[in-house]
Each structure stands twice: as C-alpha cells, then as structure tokens.
Length: 380
Ligand SMILES: *Cc1c(COP(=O)(O)O)cnc(C)c1O
Image 1 (tube, rainbow, N blue to C red):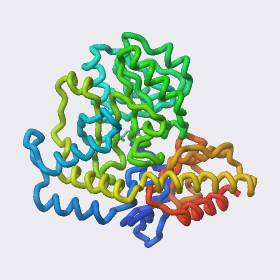
Image 2 (image 1 turned 135 degrees about the vertical axis):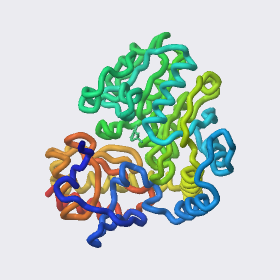
Image 3 (image 1 turned 45 degrees about the horizontal axis):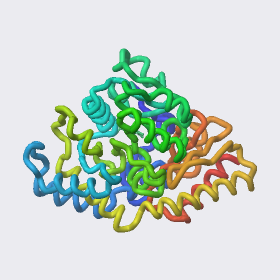
Image 4 (image 1 turned 135 degrees about the horizontal axis):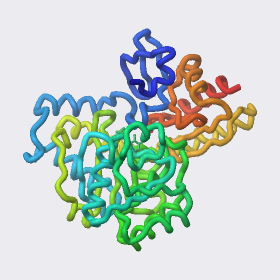
C-alpha cells in the first residue's frame, strides 16, 4: 500500500520535531512547512497553549464513555456552538473528516426521509464508503465498489446544473466552499447562495464541507460566512484540534431533531477536546483568521508579481486567505520535490498541475516572501 509519498518515496524526510511553521528532520535540516500537513496545524506545530492543555487533561483523565458528561467535552461543545455560524448550534463530535461527512450524510437522510444526494465533480469528501460515494475521483472509488447509491454529480460552479439536479427527492447537496484536493477552485459566493436557495426551496439540507476551508483558513472563521450563506450542516476536522484526531458536524435544529441513532466510542475524547478548546481559544484571541486574510492577500499578490516579473511557467494563482493554488505548466510533483529538496519548503499537490499552499495561519509576510523566493528559484 502506498500513501501520498510524493517527495518522500524518492528521498524520505523523517521529521523529528516542529515549532511554528518550522519542521525539523532527524538530520537537523529545518523545513518551512507551507502545507501545514494538509491544514492540520492552523497555529503552527505544537503550539504551547495546546500542548499544555493536552498535558493537563491527560493527567486528569484520558477517557470516559460519552454517556458521562466530562468538563473538557462539554466545554468544547459549548465553544463550538458559539463559533459556529448562526443557527448551527447542535454539535456532533467524531474522530476524522470522513466520519464528520458520514454523520452529515446519515443525518440529512434521516431528517428528510429522502435518499438522493447531489455532490460536485472534482469533490473530495473522504474515503470511508459513504463519504467516498460523494468523492469524485475514480482512482479513489473504483477498487472499492459498489458504493452507496443515490449520488448525482454536477459540474462545480454551474448554478443552472445545480438547480436542475435538486428536487423534492433530494436529501442533501454536499459542497466544499473552495475545492481543495480538486485543485483549489473557489465556488464563488453566487454559487453558494444558489445552492442555499435551491436546497431551501426543495426542503433538502445544504451540507458545506469546511474540513479544509474552516477554522479561519480563508480569512473568516468559516468560508461560508464570507459568502453570506448558512448551511444546514457544516463539517470540520483537520486543524480543529491542532492535529489530534477530531471531526465535527454542526447541525441546525431541524437536522438534529431527527438525526436518528448514531454514535462513536472515542467521539469527544477529553484529551482531544482539550486540544480543540485551546486551539479555538487562541484562534479567536489572536484574531488568527484576520491574519490569514491579510497575509493571504499579500502572498497571492507577491506570487502574481513574481510570475509576471520572472515570466514563470504558471497559469494561474488563485484562492482565498491562506488557501492558495498555483497552477503550473509542468508536473506539480516535480515542483514540490524541488521545493523540498533544494529550498527546504514543504507544500502540497492538488492534482497533477496545482501546487497547493496551506501554511499555518500564523505566518507573517517574511515567511510569505521567503516561499515566493523559493518558488522563483525552483520555477525559473
Ligand atoms: C481532508 C478532507 C476530508 C477527509 O478528512 P479525513 O480526516 O482525512 O477523513 C474531507 N473533506 C475535505 C474537504 C478534506 O479536505
């Protein structure tokens, strides 16, 4: 079995420690981490406040079954209900992004009593069978069929096609506000607003998968907020507990009322909950989303200026906040390899032609400049 060992299959880099945006390998080499391990470290690596919260909770209690309220879990649920977009005050916890979407799929079906689901071409919603049925790429799907049925894929960003696909048999529409894995493609506000209207008219649930776009990544706590759209269900994971396993499904009352029977042994584990609470507290106290907006804007304009100034083989620079896609005119894997080996900069692919940057949200303009310089070196 192989994972995404794109750089590492050729020249493995064994990471020993991390602090802020820096990862240190076992040979002492320091890497600037502009992938944030797939957006899992919004505050950088091992943020001290989160590490302290984990240690304190571990001393008190590692685990107790979910039927006993535990202070750490209850506090997190309250905090999540507070940072959630308006009306999404019902909080379901689990252990990963794909489980958060599984729950969303189950809840949407039980709340509506319907089966049909609409998802987008190029979408990525996870790899367990339910979420995989909403994920577009054949590579991920084909070996594992048959997948749960009833899913129709529509071209992402096409309002007419979406309106046509949603009817009174639709349980849910699943969308990423910006497709991450699919190549860093923003949906645009109008598309999300159309999705909101079409689902509301049909009595279907709008599910926004904010597993990658959430937690301040795009410049607001949730990407849907900048589009002025409140979904019926919002899923989060990745960075919510600074890299510890946590998935979150935020639901409107009408979904939660008829959510059916769903559960998970480790959901809301106290140590993970403590890590998430500390992460959310710091995100808000230091207005990290605002930093992501400002430095993201700076980074994208610096990238565009570098592309023009050096005539780099780049088709487009796009994104929002610190979710940035650079569409290159050569293989993205080669660029990523050179960035890592020659420039000690870690980034991510999004398909064959897009270099994806998802740095910690706490980076500054100097970090952005340094990565632009590295990209110029590698692409020139
Ligand atoms: C990563 C991701 C998932 C899956 O999360 P896992 O924790 O890997 O299961 C789902 N949706 C989006 C948008 C993601 O980026």
